[in-house]
Length: 276
Ligand SMILES: NC(=O)c1ccc[n+]([C@@H]2O[C@H](COP(=O)([O-])OP(=O)(O)OC[C@H]3O[C@@H](n4cnc5c(N)ncnc54)[C@H](OP(=O)(O)O)[C@@H]3O)[C@@H](O)[C@H]2O)c1
Image (cartoon, rainbow, N blue to C red; front, side, top):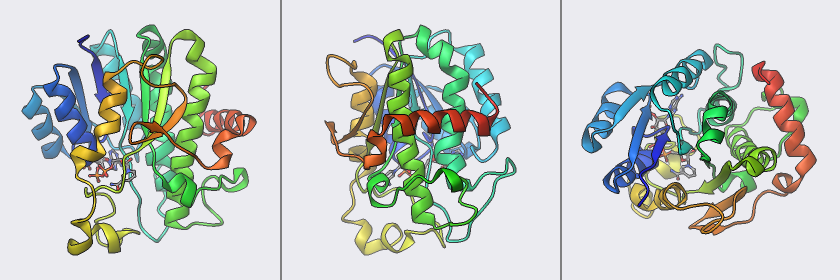
């Protein structure tokens, strides 16, 4: 087995923590990125890994994290953009001026990937985006209201962000696939984690319900596709630029198959983030 350097965000809990532990035990160098200090340190301690803290609701923290990673790791073989979640019925805005769901699930990982891009290409790396079936259920990207100022609904904001992650995945493949970068998005299943458990979270009725949550997948099971994508090669094992469920290419929202739309979204995102 070739030992890979694997950066996982949202690795302090749930699916990301399960993936970090499994990949660490397989012998990979895992870089544990979380937000909560104690939880992040505990996962890192278990697998003797480095850890970093970041809050994606503050883009300056994303810039700081990228600088630290570039300083420390001459190779990054995998970047798993896994941190994310669904938030409250009331629209929240970050200090950067973006709707919270849009920023945490899409803009912050886009920025992190952008800042690491040269290192990722030089490492012939894989970028993995933890998306969701919500891209099909609730997603409908509207360029005139990307920031959900007119029309906020927590499920729609989440579905849009997860759809935007898939469009980002497709575009990463189109723009940088020929240079050796690979990209994949995946749906982990309906998994019993901290996801949507907080009081007032939009799907608290399912995820926070003690009885129903017994029927959900375990974090270990939810992490399976992430572990597979991180540990196996694209090309020989899985095709780059696709969306996966249970290790298989899965259907997406039709908007994710509209290449000009993904290109336009990429260009607009660069403008919003003032990069590129
Ligand atoms: N659970 C499901 O059924 C399901 C289904 C489809 C997709 N997903 C996706 O799977 C991914 C992992 O979620 P999970 O189910 O494992 O939930 P989880 O147990 O709540 O874990 C979420 C992770 O994201 C981190 N995070 C949340 N907000 C953040 C922020 N503002 N800045 C930095 N990190 C932040 C958390 O950090 P701290 O704990 O350190 O605060 C935690 O490590 C998410 O992208 C989620 O949308 C989950």
